[in-house]
Image (cartoon, rainbow, N blue to C red; front, side, top):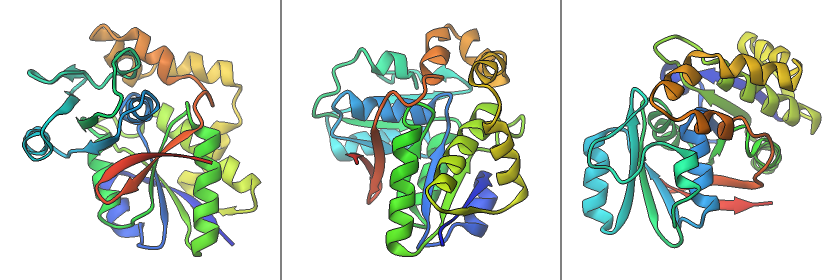
Length: 244
């Protein structure tokens, strides 16, 4: 039996994510959606970095890469791109490596990569495909699915808990069981009307920050549901595209 649960923040990752588990890391607005979009646009791989310094070091190591990132929602000075799925969707990514560092999402991805070799990046835009792959990998290897969301300065971001709930419910529908109070709350949130959730998320703290720096298009883009069937999957410390 595959068990699915939601983990909040770095401490829970360190405490509860095990080597046999499948980790699904979610940061809807905007890191997860940016990474998914970059691979959809033909990027060879995406390399998450925990810090700006690490991102610059990775550029020296890998040579001709595209640098993407933000801190506090603001594009990092000297980087090619913001952490913006809308911007990435209009950039020629074919055959290129994207190095990305963000306020929350990339740190969680790196932490998960250090604990299991089965790390997926999920969001609303690839929810269905990501759920199916996570369940298949866990069932195949006898592990559990741990859906990881950031603990931000405001606590829990509603868009991440909502996406986690949708993924957990989809996995549960494939024959898994769920555990934990946070997982239960996420599942309840997933039952709310989609249009109502979009309205609430558009007024959330994350959305307000992104709109405040001129990226309202990113908010709309990040709220697209099941439009991409590609899943970023870890290959060492890089993310590559896979499909079912």
